[in-house]
Amino acid sequence: MSLWLLLFCFSVVAPAQGAEYVLRIDRDEACPIGPPTPKIEKGLRALLGYKHSDAIVGFVLDLNGDRINDYIIQANKPLCGAETCPYEIMDGSSNKSIGTVIGDPLVVSSMKIQGHLVIQAYGHGGAKPGMYGTYVFDEGQYVEVSGIDLISE
Image (cartoon, rainbow, N blue to C red; front, side, top):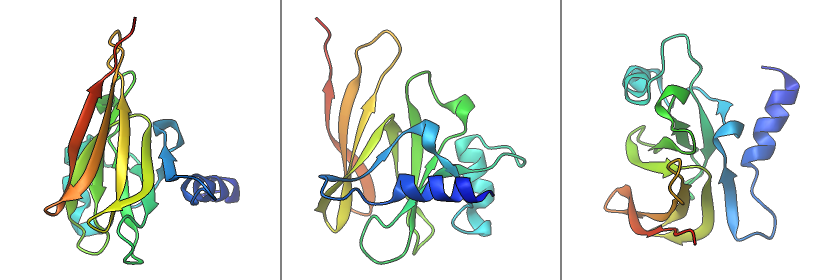
């Protein structure tokens, strides 16, 4: 990986200074990352549509303050729609899935609920105006707790 790509990937996941969010995730800015462990790579590839030769892409950051990187792994492009994409969230300490979030972009808020950062997602389904959802950590998973259908007038 070139030095430029490493610097670019770091700048994408660096915390925003003085902002109300930690990270804005846009699928066009996803960087190649290794899966959390080789043990779960096969399952991730099947779930998210990656072929063996495809680089798994996403974002790495600590969602719960345990100083262990967690993973927001983007589905392979064929599984993404024209305007949105599913992401699998993996806990770095347990290497287990802790939820699926759908949208583009995603915004990881600086606000925490149950010790985990809140994730907000905008999704757009082609001709439809779009949806805005909020995901929080509850009972071991990220779940959508609110969703708003946006209406165009």
